[in-house]
Image (cartoon, rainbow, N blue to C red; front, side):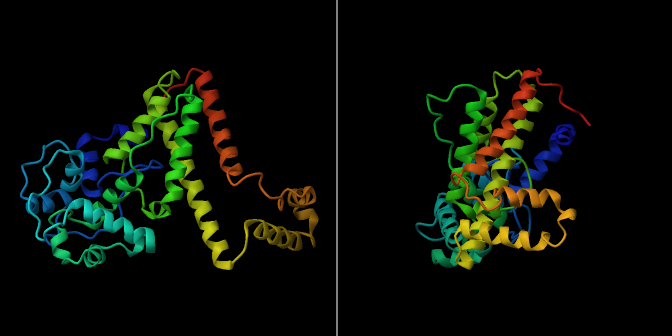
Length: 311
């Protein structure tokens, strides 16, 4: 975070213009592989030339499609085909991703599903990475209202983490979009705002606050990705989680039993029965990890927050 804060605003804006915005561990627009429009230019340049809309505000640093999402640019009033719109394009992309994975999404495939030519999409979105950002922003949506019984920074961050995890579990394809820049889409900044707001009364400085929500958000994304990978592997093998762990326990036992002196800790673990024991609930590991992280944040808050490092 310190490196990013020292960089110039122009450099950050340039990255967002190319990538469309993203966020390490935060739901909302990320960016992925290049699939640019016919002009071969950046998202902001090529889409601006095709949209026919008013001039974009010069300091947004966003592609035209994201400016449209923010209300900074008028939507094209007349499409190349009746009924085609940015919303329809985004929904079609989400449909492909949900059914076949993010790797199946391309401008050509989305156009085919919509019954239009690929070229017609570039009036609305100038590159596949921009489409990814808009798809993610639409799928994530705005954070729900915080329940009235959530009180205090810790409860606020627990709620923030859990609802993010629910979003990822509903849309596993989101986890396959690489993160390449800070969040800049409408909903991603709303999620970021909600996380920062939970830390308002902690006494942490602003740098520490953003570091904390990156830590928690990164944990949520990583845990969801790991669980999704394991679930896919178990489903492909036709095995239940408990059976997978029992088999793993037997494997570790067979590998370490011939030389127990080399693996004393593993032998002690096996003797305890904990390795093959089923979890108390599907959320047990997530809640344990989240609790450990928040225990650390609590120490930081109790110590006065410390100072943000600058190197």
